[in-house]
Structures are given as structure tokens and as C-alpha cells.
Length: 476
Ligand code: SF4
Ligand code: SF4
Image (cartoon, rainbow, N blue to C red; front, side, top):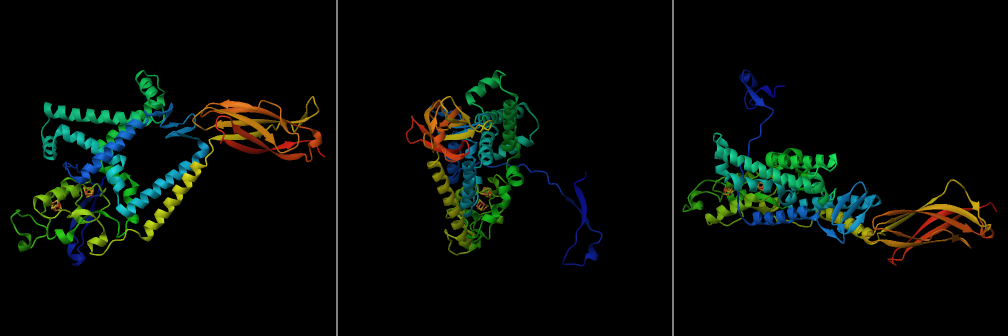
């Protein structure tokens, strides 16, 4: 299908009938123009380097770390257990996971309202991996100019070597990323052994390959395309911005009229602003935009243009900050407010959610007792003439250590548990315990009475839970 359509160009200032033969072909599809990003050094690049190292370090290390034999972070899908920082969560804790996701979302809204896209610029995995891949590219193929020259040059053994080496290193990083990701769902030490001895299951191979290919393509080939066309956050961020949001901006009051000049030229006498129109801010931009055109959805807030421009300002003996973190209000000469209805709103929801999660975590009981009444028979009389009901006790130990529990029952006179009353359950395990409760028929007042099962831990004396059930006896 053709991606071109002929359109008639009409100049609104003139009569359309004067242009009725003028047609132009407009491309509906614009092929991607490769961006050659220039490396830059400066304060924000240093901040990114440290945030990058910290995040990458955590990502690659956490799946290897265990605390008292339990993994630091591990999602055991078949076992339906999630290990997070020494605590084990089960499907019944899903509400906590939902709460954490809501906190993350509101945290992102709150920070975006205050400081724009700092998440994108410093911590988003797409940015982190793209910067690593670009760093590798710069080390192997050289500076921006050298890379452009290399791409234009005819094929040669040297070009082939550099390109092959770059892609091999990219693939190695992508494979390490894929392996690590799957290592959060499949014990990492076993995963590596199983994969290389061909003993892992097919899904493990599939997901490692999937994440390897996705990392290689996203960070090596697609780069800014992911931010521009695939990430929904770039599209809806503008609704979180207001005139007091601090974002990377060019100061046109200071910079304009822009123009090239020698350092010795007096800009005031020449009638020029501080921007020397060197284009460095565009060359360092990973999304290839010109920040001097104003706030654009393509800007990921990486602040590389600030570092580049500050370097130029320093060389020209002009004050730094022609491009800086500032607000629309400040650029218009008005004061900026940190506290405003939007930040209060997001902040209040965030605080409420954090409070609720902390409270839920603090009061969370790491054990569960479910009592299932045997529906096969209402009641029996045993050899001593006592009325018996049968139950199955489902016990879950959600703590990090084995627990011995003692079970008792109350709610009626003479009520007694005639079966085993103690059970030991390993950490993270479930146990099923048959239980028979007996009552003297003389003590039965009602044919259907509420009784209470109590489970106390002998290992941890603070652990004590109760669950209600029914005791059925003969009609009175
Ligand atoms: S880096 Fe600074 S001086 Fe150079 S073009 Fe950009 S804004 Fe102007
Ligand atoms: S304009 Fe480009 S370099 Fe500057 S912050 Fe935005 S994405 Fe980064």
C-alpha cells in the first residue's frame, strides 16, 4: 500500500483558484533519522552515572542475594509465593501488591508535578539500558563524528570488526539482562546450570530469549523510538504539568536573539543574547530535539543539554544556566510555588496509601487457619456417648521460620478436641490437619452453635489467631 498521497497546497492568504494546479506529495510515513548522540560530561551526567550504577547494581545483584536462606526478591509462581526483602507474600496478600502499585503510580504523579520527567531521565529502564548501550558504542566506534564517518564509509575489515564487536557486547549485556530477569522467577543459580546443560524447561529458554532480544532491540536499535511512540507516559505527562513544574527549559529572555560570535565580541554591543547557536544542545540530545523550541513531549528530561550548554557558557565567560531546571512561571518573571492544590492532592493520596500499607504490614499475621467442616455427616455419637463433629484444619505458615502450633477449641461447655492438637509447619508451607471435636450431649443447648478454633504458636508467643466455625448437635 502506498504511503504517499498527493495534496493540493492552498495558501490561505491568497485565492485558492490561483493555486488550483499546484500539487505536492506528502509522506505519511517518515523513516527514522538515526541520531548520533554526542557524549557530554557535567553535573547531571555524573548524577545519572551514579543513579545508573546503583540501579544496575541492584538489578543484577538482588536475584543472587539470600537472607537466612530465603531469596531477597523472588517470585515463585508455581508455589504462589513472593519473597520480598525478607518477607513472604501469598496470593491473599494481593491487596498489598495492589497498594504498592498505587503508591508507585501516585509517587510518579507527585514527582512529575514537581520536577517533570525525572523518572524518564534518570531511572527508567529504557533510559538506563540505552545509556549503557550508547556508552559501549562510544568506546568501540568513537566520538559522534567518528561514528558518522564510520557509517558513511564503505565496508572494510576495520568497519566490520568494530560493528561486530559492538553488537557482540550489546548481545552479551542483553543476555545478562534476560538471564537476570528470569532469575527473579526461577532460582538464578539453578537457571544458569539448567540452561547451559539443556535441562531447563522450554519456558525458561523462551523468556530468556525474549528479554535478550527485547533489550538488544530496545536499547540498541529503537532507543528514543520507544519513548516517542511506545511509552504512554510521554503522552499523558502534559496533564500533570502546570506553570510551576520544574522542567529542563531554555531561557529565551536570556538567549535570544541567538547568533554565532567570537568570545571577544561584546554581545550587548552586537545586540545578541547569550545563545551562540552552536547547536551542542541538539547534538547531545538522545531524542534529537532542540530544547530552544520550547517544551516538547519528546523531551525525556535527561538534562544532557544543560551540561552541554553550561560547558559553552563557561567557555564564553557567560553565567551558566541558559538551559536549566526552571518553571514556566519563573521564565515569565513570576514566583514559583512548590505547594499547590495538585501537589497537595497527590501528596495526600500518597501519604494515605503509604500509611495504610505500613499499618497493614505491621498488623499482618504471618499465619492462616481455615476451618472446613466435614459436610459428609452432621454429627456422630462416639463410644463414650459424646457428640462428635469432624473438621479439616488448613494451616499456613507465612513466617520465615518453622512454627509449632497448638490448636484448641472453645465456645461450649465440655467442648474438647479429641484429635492431635499440635502440628509443626515449615516456613512458607501449608498443612492439612483432620480434627474431631466432642461435646457432652447434656451441654448442647442449640442444634447449631458457633465455636472458636484457636491456634497459638509455641515458637512465637505473639502469634495467636482464632477462626470461627459451627458445631452441629441433636435438636433440643
Ligand atoms: S548549547 Fe547553549 S549556546 Fe549552544 S545552541 Fe544550545 S542553547 Fe545555544
Ligand atoms: S531536550 Fe533532549 S537533552 Fe535536553 S533534557 Fe530533553 S531529552 Fe534531554
